[in-house]
Length: 270
Image (tube, rainbow, N blue to C red; front, side):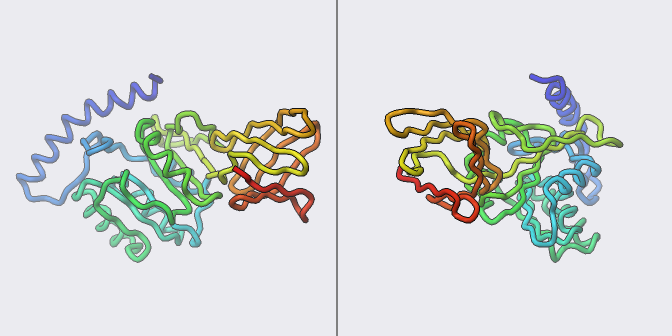
């Protein structure tokens, strides 16, 4: 376990005590709900992403008014509200009903309630298929469970994370911020790749590709000989790889690939 992750869990252990006391005091006084760092949730406790890192995450994802941003385990709604301030439509899914109500109130106060929507629900069951951006602060075990749904997003969709990576995947971009960010100063960007794994008819040969997120490995079988590809990589629907020193770059569209101006083509056969 990393030092940061150990610090995270230590912080949460302290937070559980203060959260319980804070919730009890709120019930006794009838005051509006106020979240407390470390309060327990169904799948993850609440630790807010620093505002400076929220903005960095949205910058990395290049969020604009054309995007639909989703946050799973949205907490107090800060990722969603920040995206809405940029003109994007945004949705927060949060299991804690009090957090949902709080987020809705803040969105109204900031004048973005028409862009920022919050629903009470299970983040693992949420429909994220229409998202162009996911902005998340989740633990590695949460991300691993959600990874299959991430892979089903439209190629080119962006996933930005606070601190914790998706196990086994290389981030396309990792950046740190300065300022008031405490232990949470690192943002990671993943660009969802097209699905290129399989066997492709490539000229007079067969190109067999394996894929781990955006990284491709594989072999070209042609005229009784086999050649290993190098430098295979995807960025959304853009694909590039080299065979015997020749670089191939193009796009993946379902079961077809093609280079610029039809310079080369491939068809998936299985």
